[in-house]
Image (cartoon, rainbow, N blue to C red; front, side, top):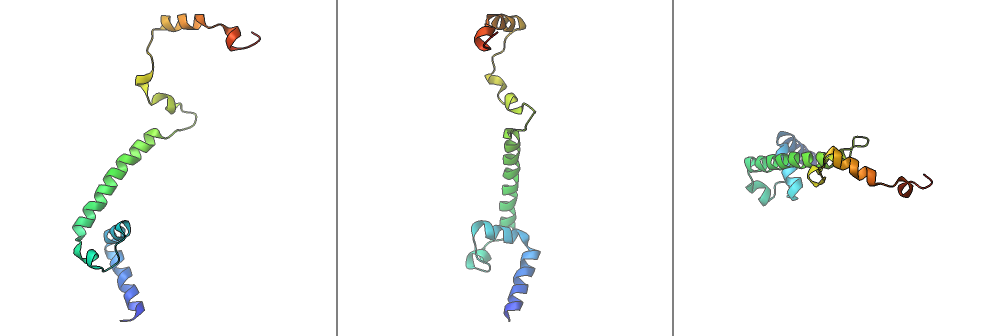
Length: 106
């Protein structure tokens, strides 16, 4: 068996079983090692599906956290932390503001 035959075998194997390739790279398991031969494709597939499942959840969390310019989404994240007040209460607070102290020369 030549080097070229070995390379063709490895490439064919990886093309037939891409889950195996991903699994080996993730856990740094050498091709055709004892550890590699002891694993089943089903176990590898379950491991991959778990990663994909939780990866999607993590992606959704990250998407919610991501700042999007000009949308104000950073203000909407923590609605519970905002103080709720009536319009009258807000008007009273605004009436207490002294514009001259906030904006000089007014």
